[in-house]
Length: 501
View 1 (spheres, rainbow, N blue to C red):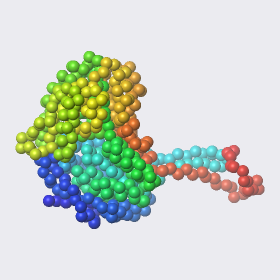
View 2: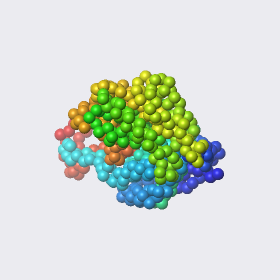
View 3: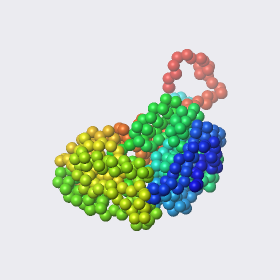
View 4: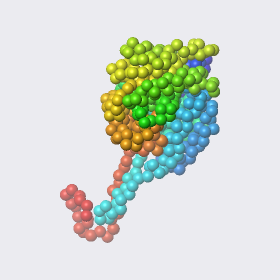
């Protein structure tokens, strides 16, 4: 059985690790490899390599960094097919879905290709007599990323291209459930010409995470995952003086008004709820049917959920793959059962799904629950699986109130043909990312990604302009070049607080 190693200082290495964890093929349920789990010494080795590399990388030119990013971007294009299949084999998502993830991650690399523009400072001439002011941004040092299983390429790409392009070095701790994509990326960076030690990968569990959070030589930590862990990361890392991006969980609502095109809305709700088996932080997990839209919407959603082809990710006919682990599968099964017990109508039940030839895989089919109320677990819990809960309200105001009363504020959507309703919705919902007739409103790379409330701990969104600000700090320089032939008055010592003139 193959062993997935760390990537430290430009090479694959087992370092001092002795512990390992299993990596499964979710479609078969069988273990396909094992991954090393770093101890504190392994993490320290990676951070030391990154610290040494920072000494020279921080002084590299913007042109050099951009050229490496351009080459890295082209390598991602060249190896897209191979990388998508690798993601599918460990995560379970279908290959075409994995391709989409790669493309969206690559868009952040493309943003990093223009980092020189994003790092331009400002200059003010003659702010006082003979005095000018300018500022510029400098990198922080060694930065760390702790990323989830659901997007093994895209979410890390929200972090490391911006961190590296702004002059930092990086240590990535990806999910141990699907670790191979991160090593693949490390090799592409090396091929692109990135110096050894600038990008490092350590695999591991809580031991590795805690070591990164406490390490005195790490300046900043970026995290995406569940809200409880985001709180833990934020509290622990800030306690040791680090900058922290901590993105948490979600319960994303999609509101459908009676004036919406129900076929259009149902198509997008189905894709957003069941794509990647619902294992997306921006998945739509609650459909909010307003007024008379309810019965008709549920009927269309039922037909579309039943039409989804579930199968292994490498089968071109498959539209939805398995869950990532056996435990994840059981969690979804339990959630549907609890919903039924608490009074929801189980319109589509995916609990007993089997796939011929893959009977031991981690399968759950699309499940549709109707008449879900806010007191039910199916509404309150982040199920993170292929379960769409439909709640019913009478007005758009009730829909907005429902969303605003939810503790999460990651993403939301409204389906309508009314510009007035759309404007009211986008102004009044307490959510960070909003789609109008767009079900998964993930911003483009030149905007920043981040929710509100329990979906973002702290105040640092990720990638885009906020990412540049997060990975750099500003120096402001006030300059005067006095004439050598100064007057006696100019040369005199004055102890009063200086003012402009």
